[in-house]
Image 1 (cartoon, rainbow, N blue to C red):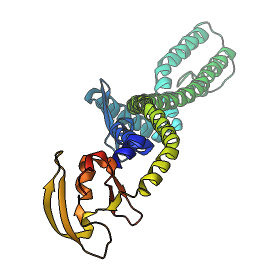
Image 2: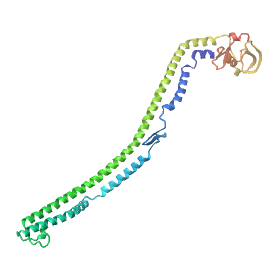
Image 3: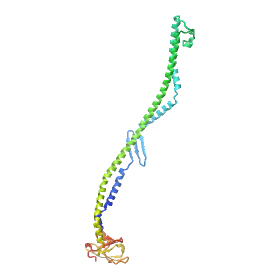
Image 4: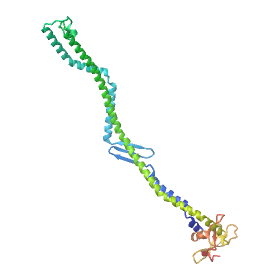
Length: 322
């Protein structure tokens, strides 16, 4: 009977499904997102598993990054502490000091022309018009020179303030530029991480796709086997029904016997025994053991509704047992 079942169904669709599951388990590790390491001239990045990602820049880039961040921080501090008003006063003082000798030369030259030519003007203190001590009096030309010099100083003050604000802005721009450079280097770490993620994702996807292709024949095979099962089900039902109604079918399960003794052997090597039934049983007490026949002539054995094995003594290879 076991031979009939095997011939009709084999392992059936479930057997093929089991093979597919086993193969899928073999392929599964390749289709998972696995640990990886990516190394370039910029550094190393990787994934250790369980959400543990890491990245490390190479030594040259780490040094550049440290210098850029340190320089940016220092420049930002200088920009924050920078006082435009104090710097403007400093610049004005320096530039005014440079102009003072020129102003004095202009005043001396004008005074020489005025008094040397005998021209006199208004009696005013020369000191108030920038002509120096002891000049005694000035002339309209002297007044114009003083106004011109004062206007120059006023313009110098405005330029000093403009220069101070420009220096502050330059500090801020330099700090921002260095910070931007540091961020660019930090971006290399992100690029490394992205490179590794993309590569591992592509590899896992490729492995998954290849696995799907390799497993697809199992699906087709299982479907075909299931169709064969359906086609043979009617025949199998009839065969089982006919076998169970066979008058030569007797219970012969070793689990129901005791005091078993071998008494003979057929020419084909099948052993013949005598025994006592453990429980009351009207079947013969001489014959074969169903479990032994299952191994040699499985189609001659069937399982009864009570779960115990029966033997078809009408089978050609069992002739002569009774």
